[in-house]
Image (tube, rainbow, N blue to C red; front, side, top):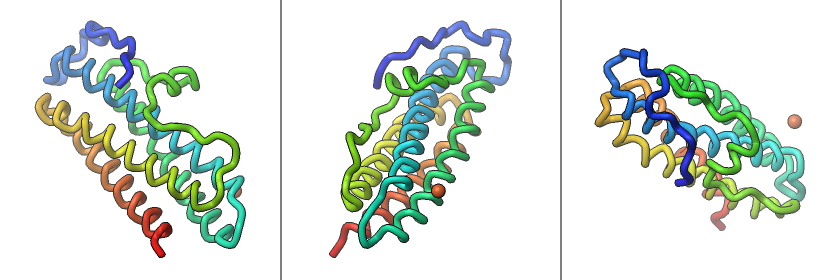
Amino acid sequence: MAKTKIDPEMGSTIDIGISSKDRAKIADGLAHLLADTYTLYLMTHNFHWNVTGAMFNTLHVMFMAQYTELWNAVDPIAERIRALGHPAPGTYAQFGALSRIKEPEGVPKALEMVRMLVTGHEAVAKTARSLFSVAESAEDQPTADLLTQRLNVHEKTAWMLRVLLEN
Ligand SMILES: [Fe+2]
């Protein structure tokens, strides 16, 4: 994961039973999750606009449901970072530096779009999963709960997209 500028002393007046060191570590992980989620949101909306071919209607509608879900997901992730006392990243430059998701070049064919989205959802699941043990050992239940919800969505969506690639 890329390094971010997280100040470990940030929000040092916060007294919720999680040390400032743990809050900084969790905020850093959540910043990566936010960047991944935002990047995957944009990719999905891009594909909603640009998909072509025999599966147009199915994919256009399916991508709309998926980008709407992702768009709604960025807010609770950012606000959890704030509740832990840190600033949430919110620029394309920050998201580009933090995200592990590879962005598309040009306009991929419909099935290539599906393949890229499967990889994207799997990548976000890995980011969320890598933070889980950190949140759990810090007894940060709200973050653990948020991560569980995000894992459920990304693994389910990856499955729904993956089956489209089967013959
Ligand atoms: Fe639309």
